[in-house]
Length: 175
Image (cartoon, rainbow, N blue to C red; front, side, top):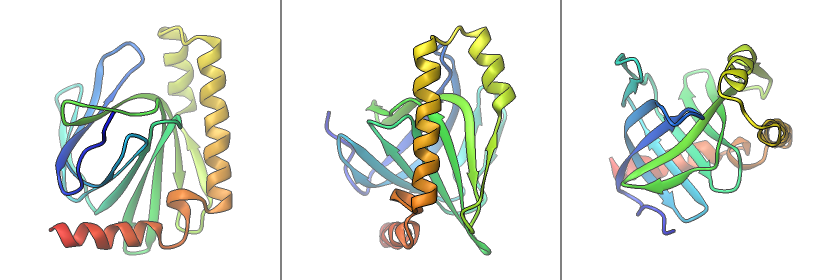
């Protein structure tokens, strides 16, 4: 699978385990696109929810997707520093000009000082029971959450100093 070309605009689509479309980010600029990694950026992009509501993102964001990890990472550039929102979800696929992944509810919110909070554990348990997540999937998701926390603690990948700023500078060259 080839990745999208840098400079192209794509959608980001998240689904639920049952195949239902959950959320769509309309316009994200590809900064790096390979079969394993896609790094994108967006700013004030329209987001459509499955219930028909729409909203617009407030700040520039750098999005990191990997084909082997069960999480994706969004670094949001705010005045007080970079805030991260990490989704526990399936590895991405790229098809029909869109990044697609399954959102498994668990989220990790990481603050500029690298402290973090785990979110939506109750929503995860509800959907795990409603959609009958296999035990092996539950284990994969929890292991990847631990791996993600390790990345935060080790300042690895998008949590590395300057990672988000460098990719944001590249984004600005396309605008």
